[in-house]
Length: 392
Image (cartoon, rainbow, N blue to C red; front, side, top):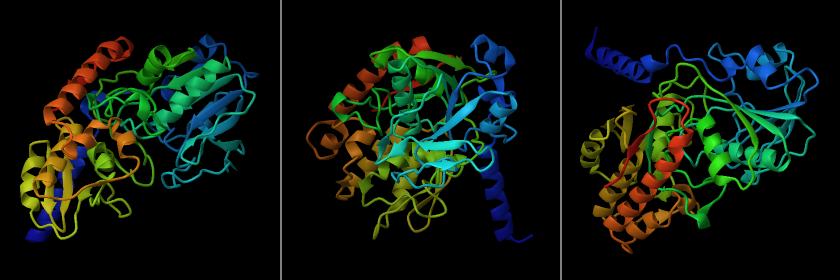
C-alpha cells in the first residue's frame, strides 16, 4: 500500500471517529419516538383534533422515517404542514422565499412560514400545533426563531403547542453575548447566548416563561437517555450544513462569514470547513492558535479544517481569536449589515474598531452570560446542565 493511500485512509478513519455519536447518546430516544399513544391520550388528542405540524426534512426518527408519516400512522388528524426557512426538503438557500406546496406522499398542504427573511404568521383554524425540527445549536440559525414565533402565536390564539425534543448537535457548551434589545431580529430572536447549549424543548420553556408577554399552553415531549453530548445529525440541516462537521464549523465560522474579506467555504462542497483571504500567506501562525481550540487544519490555499473537537471548542473565543489574529496583521474588516444582529451586540464591532477595550467587551459579555445561566437553569430538562464558557 503506497504512502498516499495510507494517508487518505488515516484521514478517513480520523473523520469517521470524530463524527460518530457520543456513547452517551447511543440509547437515545427522540421526542418523536416518545410521542406514542400514552402521551397522545394524556394530551387529550383524538381523531377530531385538527393538527398543524411545523417541521422539515430533519423531522425524522432514528430509522429515517418522517414524522409526517408516523403521525398519520398513529391516526392523528394532520391537517397542515408548516415549513421554516429552507423549505420542507431543505433545498432552498438561506434568505430565499419559501413557496407553498403539497407534500407529494401524504398530499397534505404545505404552507411556508418564511418570506422576505422573516416569519409569516399562521392563518389556519387548528387545535394543536406540533413543532419537530432539528436545531443546530446556534442562536442565529432561524429554526429556533420559528419556534419562538410559533409559541408567540399559540399564546395569543389560545392554541396548544407540543414540542418534540431533539438533541443539541454541538453539545452543551453555553457561551457568547446575549442579544441587546435594539438588535432583536429574526436571526437573533431573543436574549439568549449565541451558542446556547440547550435543546429546543428547553428553549421553548425558557421563551414561554421568561420572554413572551403571554404564556402558551406548552407541552414538551422529552427525549430519553439524553446526556447533553454532541450528536451526529441524522440528515442535512440546510444546503450549507450538509453534515455534522459543517454544523461544528458553523458554530464559529457562521459569524466569521459576516465579516469580509473572509471566505468560509459557503458555495463550495465543504461549507463552513475553511478560512480564506486573498493574498494572505501566514496561515501557519493561525493554525497554531486554532489547535488550542481543538481544531485541526491544513494549510492549502487558506486553512482547510479536517477535524473539530466540539467538546473542546470554545466557539466565541475562537471567533474572537481569529479576528484578533488578523487585526494584528492589519487586515481591514468590513462588516455585513446583519453582523451586529447575528452576534447580538454592538460591542464586538466597537472593540474591533478600537472604540472600547477588550476588558470592556469580555466583562460585559461574561457578566450577562452568568445572569442568563442563573435564569435558564430552572428550565433545563436533562443532566448535566450546559457548561458555561466565558471569554478572555
